Image (cartoon, rainbow, N blue to C red):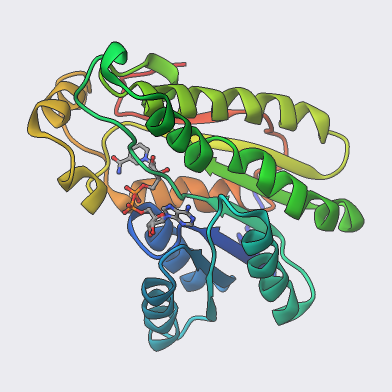
Length: 257
Ligand SMILES: NC(=O)c1ccc[n+]([C@@H]2O[C@H](COP(=O)([O-])OP(=O)(O)OC[C@H]3O[C@@H](n4cnc5c(N)ncnc54)[C@H](O)[C@@H]3O)[C@@H](O)[C@H]2O)c1
């Protein structure tokens, strides 16, 4: 009989930065990590919301700081990462949950190039920017976790969400390539692909879009924030050591690949 050995999910002194951590999936993940003893830096374009989220973590007994950060701006991201590193001299994991929906409810021939490119700039290009900013720090230490929040739309393609679907599909491809690039360095690069999760992001979607997404989920319900946060926390932990370049499913059975 094999004896199982209980280990703490996060060693003492573990530090993470959650980009887009002031709301929704990012905030739920930052809160869960903090409850598990991780020092979190909540980086968000909305600096005031990041302050409020970090204060809420501290009020609950966790360790957190806020950093105003626009993930589309490399200098801004560098400053936020440096402020995270300055807390303890090291950051072990970066979770990227920043994202926008882009143009919705119109077929491709009615979508403008500028609004499409803006969606890629927020949802896709940061996959490269984050690597440029974070990976040198990880390489020096021989350890690091990057986790991006992609979407089922990137696996399956949601009609009338062309910028969103394309940007998330791009992110999934980027993660595959980066996972292989750093596979012998102690660094893993992964993503999650949620179907519909109950957040304010969902409330802002047209009802027809929500219904379209719900009817495709075999479980017949939305995902819950804690379900996403649990998976992100696991992927960001040392325990998830033998998976890289992968996009984890969170779709209630919609995508079984
Ligand atoms: N909610 C869902 O059903 C769902 C499903 C699949 C994928 N996702 C993805 O999950 C991620 C988070 O979604 P959510 O529902 O939590 O959204 P949300 O809008 O509640 O939170 C997103 C956060 O990202 C921040 N942000 C946006 N642009 C930014 C930028 N340029 N720089 C830094 N921060 C920025 C926002 O200020 C906000 O705090 C997104 O990438 C989204 O595409 C969400």
